Image 1 (cartoon, rainbow, N blue to C red):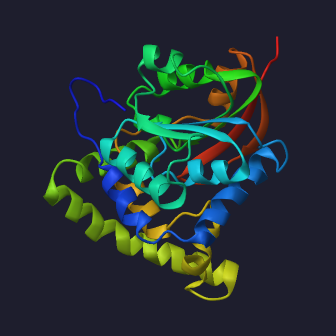
Image 2 (cartoon, helix red, strand yellow):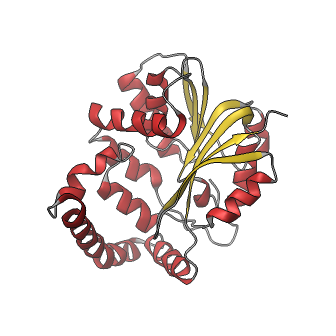
Length: 272
């Protein structure tokens, strides 16, 4: 992804993904598969064209491939590409139906050259490009008629989002900024998770134990992604739905967050 020509601060997504991959196991892969089938259904995956835009660690590309899809995955961050390649080499070496490579969702020539796909998947990516609406337009054109667009975008919380933007920008401004943000916010996030675990699971550690069931992710690495993820843009569910409706999409599913974090959408593209 790219940032503006003025503000070049950027979070090292690939470094965080590499740390996450050291804990990968079959349980997390199964959770990633379940996240896809919960959102898109469990039938019709054999031969389905799955386009992973901003593939990060590659775990959801792997999940889609295990479900039977033909997978094309890319990322702008070279370290993220290396992570996804490592994952493929570990779990599906030499598989010709899963390709991984570099690319930018903001590069129209690159995107047009990838063709159209039955599922375009971009979870928590487009809001980190510095040009979220342009990125959304580009992925929308990659969806085949009748295909699905599965995306997650940060929720617009008004002035709170502006405050989080400054936190993330501080994190990415050097080692001092990183340690300052971690020292202040990691304890707060840990206390929040313990409180949620006590309420939801009957014990303070419940949230930590069960988090990998959420798309196969890691709570700690998601915290780092949240605190450092910059560039950072946000959108309301209504704004996203309106934008894509004007481009021939119908909203099928919305899972809205009640606080910071991502709203999750599944859209279907008109066949006409």
